[in-house]
Image 1 (tube, rainbow, N blue to C red):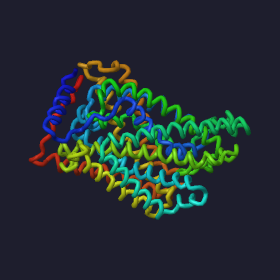
Image 2 (cartoon, rainbow, N blue to C red; image 1 turned 45 degrees about the horizontal axis):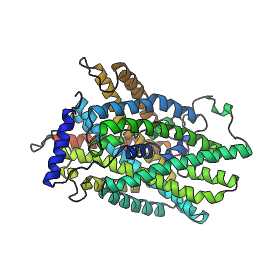
Image 3 (cartoon, rainbow, N blue to C red; image 1 turned 180 degrees about the horizontal axis):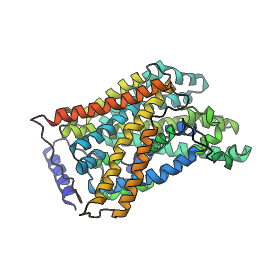
Image 4 (tube, rainbow, N blue to C red; image 1 turned 135 degrees about the vertical axis):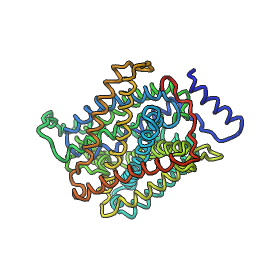
Length: 488
């Protein structure tokens, strides 16, 4: 057993015998596969992409080959070398130093401050379909949406404070709901095509030019495919991470990638691209296809399944991202209170509460001068930018490892790490830039750019402020972590 893992296990045993709170290894391989599916397969990202038309299918295939494959390889390689709590924060810190580690972890965390509200908006927008046509108009009522979204966030935060032993069942249920919903969507598309013929033809997939608004969708496609690193953020809460993570990454990646492409084609078969709503596009496609073949009774159950699926996604990202300020609090780069564990449930409850509180504030601000759909799009693209910044570090880390003269192989050879690093870095950089292109039918370009640039700069400058203030405190004591498992 690697020395670093020995240290971690010995520490856990000492904490257990002393009766002090410690992180519990609650996640097995089945839990990880479902966690990856629920984290990666976010069906709420399909409608904004599908609205660009059939050519967006090529975006999925390109991103799967040049971004998703390198991501999976990077997660397997880096989690093997550094298997402990913190994930991308820990990896970047070990390879590039404390400042870059903090910036990477900060962006990973703050991206979810934007992303979690988009998921909550999506849950509310879909859940109104459970009650039938008479309730569907509530999905565009800003007061109803905001109150319901905040209430859901409070409940999910509370469940995760109770621990991953409880929270993982929400995640698992969400993973099952995501798969079933995507399969039903594809099945409906096949049934409608057989009964009435296909509305799509080979010529529809032909790339005839570059649409200024369409290119921003590529950033959303890359963003939709992130999530394989999420479990590693909770590395100290996984049972035998070196054995369970690689297989779970492969299975979770294959399932998610295949269902993304299938769901996009299904939505395009159901609705003209101009009629695909950013928030309710999936359930609108289900409603249209179910009514076409006279099984409209299917809509409420699918709406319920999709609601549970996105609730699981929300819970997974809430739990995972809160581990970043928790670890940074232990490292004294953020207020030490964020590193506290609940005395009974052994969860980072302060970090979870802070995550929920700030997400509530962002949710409220997103409606300022915007409709529900416009607010959703701005939040989504801000989340895209902040989420992809840590991926720049991840792929640079692969290249740094491959470039070392004393390179020691962990999982993959030097050429494989170079190929994955270069491919992933290039695609990630393109995705970040394209996210600043205003989407079609969104907010006016000036207001959109102001929110995007202002929001991004605000959070990056805030990260630098916290790091330099807290790193210079005389009382700051960094943790000694047994993380150099193979090569540091």
